[in-house]
Length: 164
Length: 164
Image (cartoon, rainbow over all chains, first blue to last red; front, top):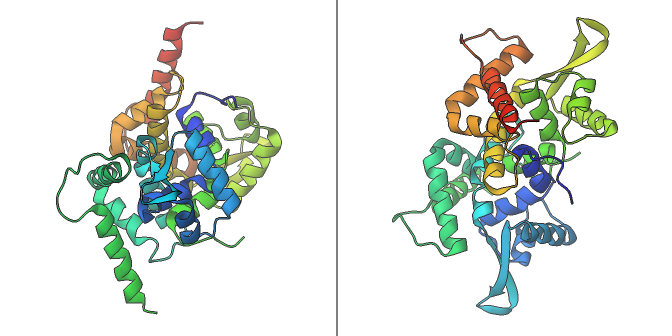
């Protein structure tokens, strides 16, 4: 597939400009889902399995995820983020910030985006470090509650407050 | 069209997740193109006129552009950005930064992304103010060469250096 132009925004859109790729990467980043089945069954947007399969194939081809056998379950594969996809965290934050401001978001699904936006570049870098640890085996560089933990706790608090 | 979920990233992707919308908005923001014909004929990616028509229709419907008669040419329409699309500047910058780092960009098409990335949030805000002036009639708040002028000058310098 020839590229349409060498403009960085165009090239990014050529890879990420579809209705699912960023949503799948979001679930791997913020949901911690690593296997095909986990991503499929936790999808709030109800991704179809054939779409998920085709998008994961594209993400593999573009170097945004890697795939390996799960050491705990011989018949299962797990997907990992790469430096290339982890570097999309600031794009995710800005898209989330824009969505929060202009689109009809739901409270419980927006608290994480809000905290990341308010946390600024330092928090994004910390979150990327955690993803590098989980997905690339990089050493832990910081003690204390992780950004993931803090986002998850805030999400659960909003859900609890809303009641059943 | 029902929304898939109230997640801000998902909602943003539902609107912008295609191969052309962000590229059209980029041309309006950075190229200054305002009419259908200008956007079509200057498209480096060679957008087809039926695709451009359908994407502009969607951008109008979603409030990302408005359309009005051109006061200088009665038979022409010009499109304007809105606060909603001007607020996408930080998304553009982060997408451009990511593309610059990981994708095979061309030098002359990447200098503007580089300057904006290096300029940081203050330069993005200044650029958004200029777009508000041009597209929304907001007053000019700053004297001196505009961000647009500086980006264009840097682009022309790279093109001149590369020779014919």
